[in-house]
Image 1 (cartoon, rainbow, N blue to C red):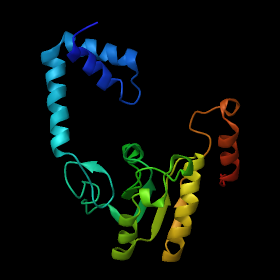
Image 2: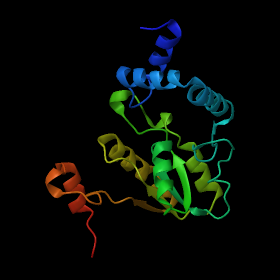
Image 3: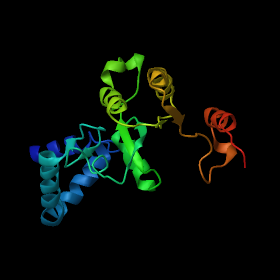
Length: 197
């Protein structure tokens, strides 16, 4: 199709989540059609991110400062820590603007089949924060997958001796969701985590 530069760009883009070979080809064509207005700024932004973005040593978030803007914000409640699997989960929760506490990014979930054990998760900073701070509540906001639930139960057992309140996000029918299209797991979660109206 094109030279090795084009093929390399397509190959690299196709490795990104949500982009297969076709989408990568379309993205490459869009970039190449307007290299000065699209490709050059993208290359500069990628280089700046590679040079400056780092993992927060306190919570595991990605930011250009360490600690990140959330951990260093004095208006955030240090007594509440929301535990999430990934930085993407943290960003999704932050986008709602509802949670005013702090976070702990595990970097994944326990998965015996994939060979991911407790030592592979970012647990040590959470324990250190329990030791150093006045944490009163840990909110487990993990995925409703087998691995997420396994991780939640394991974490519960690890956190129980600390005497902090341990809660989990409710799971069930999403806003605007129709019961007839929900799977059994979602409906079961919705019925078992029901609350008073």
